[in-house]
Image 1 (cartoon, rainbow, N blue to C red):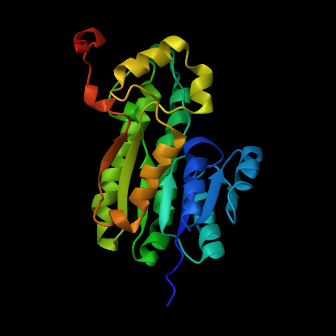
Image 2 (cartoon, rainbow, N blue to C red; image 1 turned 90 degrees about the horizontal axis):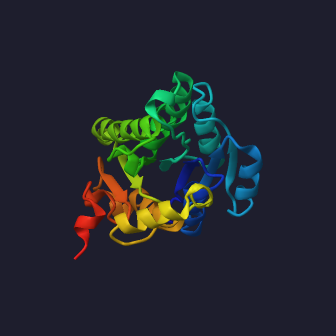
Length: 254
């Protein structure tokens, strides 16, 4: 009897890590639903992933979460994996961060993960071996300037992941978080000055940015049966950045 083809929903799939993950899952034989609120960018991204389901929704909309899961299960017959990748970044000093800016970040980065995951529980449970991978950030593990909303939202995603692992394990649903460090995305390269790039290279033991493909590989592993006994874990895919703590660069010189 042929093995059932596994299906995954990837949010924030129009670009970056989400798109890289969708492409890799498809290449590995998964059915992939790609979701983003940027309809124009999503249309172009979906065209590069054979057989992908295109879903234009905003993860922060409580009324949309049930509809997006229904669309996936209707198209593919079930749902085995959920990648909560959709997120927004807003950097600025604490005193300049309005409550509106704070809520905008929280609505997508934290509320969206809660809403989509909650809506997906029934379908993931029905699959018999569901997996959730939440994309947090190294900024959720170590504080940095200008990240009061972003870093706090990602720290919330990490705790939410632990709650999911504890409560959903009885349904054989696994939940893990990936914390990317600096990744060489088009957006990062557009806003990072050479001084910032040099500083990151100095602070990261592997002396480089990560790639979207490298983060996608970690995500796909956690979704796969090879990670069947891994849940409630927070994986820093960061070239060793989190391990360096707050040591001064000058003190790391031989």
